[in-house]
Structure formats: C-alpha cells, structure tokens
Length: 68
Image (cartoon, rainbow, N blue to C red; front, side, top):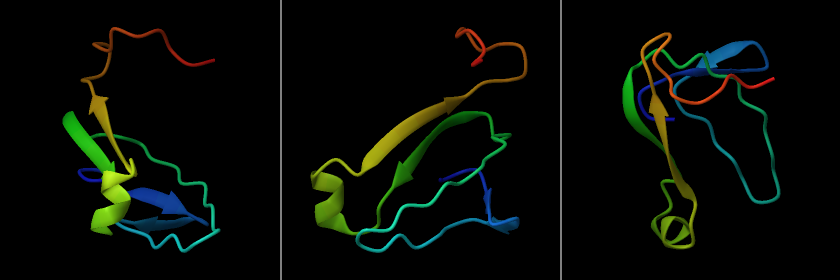
C-alpha cells in the first residue's frame, strides 16, 4: 500500500508477500494524505487487474459517509 504502512499479526509492515492461494487481512490507519495505490509487483498480475487506487483525505474532509 504505497504511502501508508499497515499491521499484520500485530507487526508494522511497508510491504508483504502474498503467495498463490494465500489471503491476508491487513489493517491500515491511512495518514498520508493524497492518492495512493495498492499494487502487485508481478507485471502480468497488474495487467490482469491486481492494482487499485485509493484516496486519503484530511481529517473531516472526506465527502463519503463514515463506514458503519
């Protein structure tokens, strides 16, 4: 998750490996305001859609309703 670190199993990470057939739940407190990406560094995976963008807003400025 470019621009923001996350925790997995209680440990802070900037990157993590996801192998075939493996799923992991990552928790992120996004504090780096701006547009960022979640990507896979295997090029042909990116062409198949393993890339996503996300926007981090300043506190109180997100135009979307809070998640329940």
